[in-house]
Length: 496
Image (cartoon, rainbow, N blue to C red):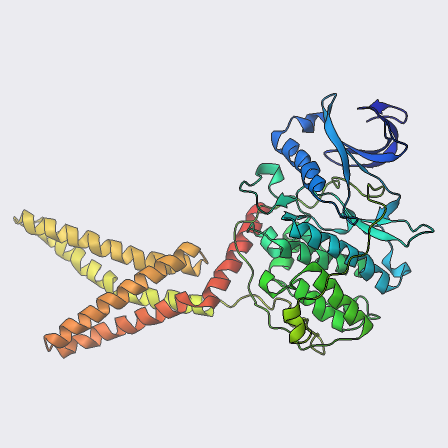
């Protein structure tokens, strides 16, 4: 660690602003200009890591593209004495994580996060996602005689250009703080600007409530809260706030991004309107499922990477206010008001998905499998009998037929078992086996009717009905939602 008065890359160190697992942020004096900067240094051992180096350099490149008063500015970067470094603009202040919201009117917190929303929308318009929006990365600049306190967004360390055709891997692939990560982020899906809106909603909740929406010491519980639990009501912690705020947050933090607001500014505008009592609307319907994929989740514990007590921020942000989407304005306010009485907020994500249709499809498939199982048993007995006879050619045909029936039996039984286990491959195989069952049963019924052997319908018709039931239930959306939920649960358990 550099001491006060030390010189690095021409900058004279004046103090330490923060320290994390990857490096240190110093308050330093610019070598040629009469101003202070935030000098961000990676540890020497970290600087040798190719992926972390790429992430560090990406932060400078991304922020350098953005010229907005609500986004931290970058002056210079380089490598010196085995350390990667970035010189960033500094301003006196704190961050939203240590800013005491209860000491200020709620409207002040909403105004500050409204400035952050404008900065995010600006970055999104230029193809940049932040992907790590949280209180520690929203800096609150001290008020001065010329202007009131204002917010600035910092630490684009894991931001990604939305038009990039490559993805970061290993430690740089996903490092957003769990407490503020969106469901699609935590599930490893491709993200867009609406993931920053979700995180901004979590941040607003945390600032006003004094804790994140899914606070827990167990990282797995935090993840599952984001993925499948209802959005908690802010008014349960802050009864002094209007109930309409719960509905607005429920929409901004909807489990499916299509149910969120059109922009971050639209979200904070709705919060302001709810706070002022200007709008109340009916609750929006929300899906009950969780997005699925394999999450790649880092531990929540450990030091913050770049603590934000001292900050490097542009001193003159203009409060930007983006107009509401005219398509939404035409039909009135679209955010939701909470349902009266106890229970989860409408539109907050609902209960765990039902597995009823998946179980029905699996049972129907197993019942269909009883038919090839019976044929297999009869064929096995016949094959054993033929083994002692002289007709080797008949024995070969019997073995081939037995193998074919075995494959059919494995397909039906295996797909049902995998479906009951909540596996995507089980659903796919169930659909395939059901289609085959419908086709073969239909052909069989046609042949029986053509041959006028109507007694055969008694055996074939149940197979057709069961195959149709299995096909419909396996293709149902509720089956897909339940499998998505089970996939996410397994991924979290593997990680933790």
